[in-house]
Length: 410
Image: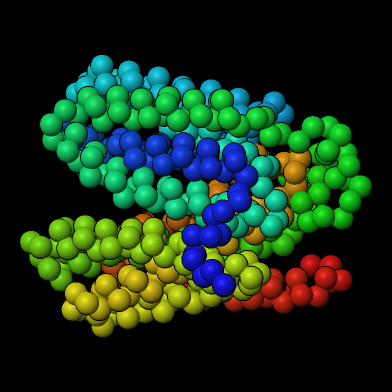
């Protein structure tokens, strides 16, 4: 018997391998976003507060872009929306390279982020279209693995470019975005279900059967998915609160060595994601996604709680190992569950609205985390993150119980 964890990536749809390569190329050359705040302050003269407000505006622009792009992708097709929006992003980043050090860059980046919002739902719908219930989890895992390999490499290259030739932060990102459209254009067919497939789906009883009407009507036919999204908002709150507090905590512990220590710790978690991704998925693929998400939440809580008394570096690495394994389990199964329950007629629109609902906790976490630290202490933030995770686990547990009773109306 072959127990090689990488075997889960054999025999996947050709389109998934193409999308994985495109994702890897994009993420390796994702130079702009990781260094955007630093570029605004050091090259454009923004204050920290101005840079923070700019980043908030940039995040908000993603939302209308996502909603617009999802509607177009469900109506006209995923592939063309994805490719055109990526090329538009490449265009705006290329312009930034010609205007290095000028305020115009701030506006071009906002335009690029708006296009990114248009692109993501189409990309998410495409990868769901080309997979099925049997290979979807492994397919999503491979794309997630490609993303993390790229993000492990990209910031190192981006840091060198930032110091030596900042224009190439933008030009490199633009070239990668444009280049990654070529294999998708040549090797991936338009995946949007045709009218006949949608009508046939409506007559069936599959959990991803098509629905009539707009986004709101389709969402109301999936109450379990909405409850799951609520649970995930507690997960994103706890995870983002820890992400906000951890560099501050490490800086307080190690003073001048804090930033370097934090960087090494994040590098360690990146290695765990890359190495652990196929292992975790191969060990848990036979369990249903809701039970895996519950286990992920427990691993998060188990990894977060010891930060209250952790002072030694090895303790921080151990905590990080535990919650990073939870992250791998969470990300793969959360996407898998949502994709399986999304109507085939509304896949792009669900790929836009679900991250918005789930991301409520992520949006609130930095503000709430800062208030907790200032008003109480860092220990209370760790406890709050643990509590948020456990609330999410309880909601998923209730949902899991209902799904084991298929005749329940809820």
